[in-house]
Image (cartoon, rainbow, N blue to C red):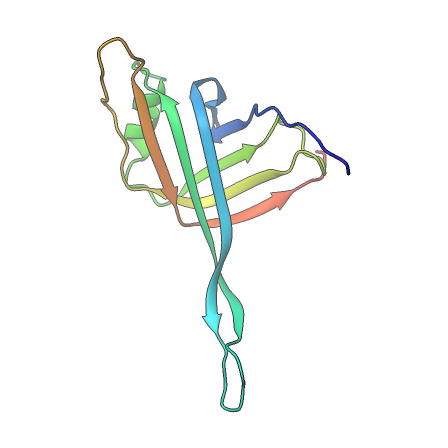
Length: 139
């Protein structure tokens, strides 16, 4: 049985800003709404795909300043037209490194201040909605 080991080193861009060096973790969940198509005479439920669904959760190190994380996120909170580009390892797309582009994501809230004595300040950043595209071709 073949096994592989993957060491995470995702790249994340919010708009044109590469924030990879400030991201501790990223979770991308893609899918489709489930629409029921069960009709009279069917002996079990049937479904088809509906609209795309996408959720992105970033855990980021808080940093403050004109071009830092807090300022970047404060500018887009409440914005429904955010573009995210996420890849599991590096910025060159391939079959082993798919790049996901999320267009029209919505950031409803984030934690601009989260302080615990002796710990690094972290921001939980949840994006929802929009559409996603998967790319495995090199530029």
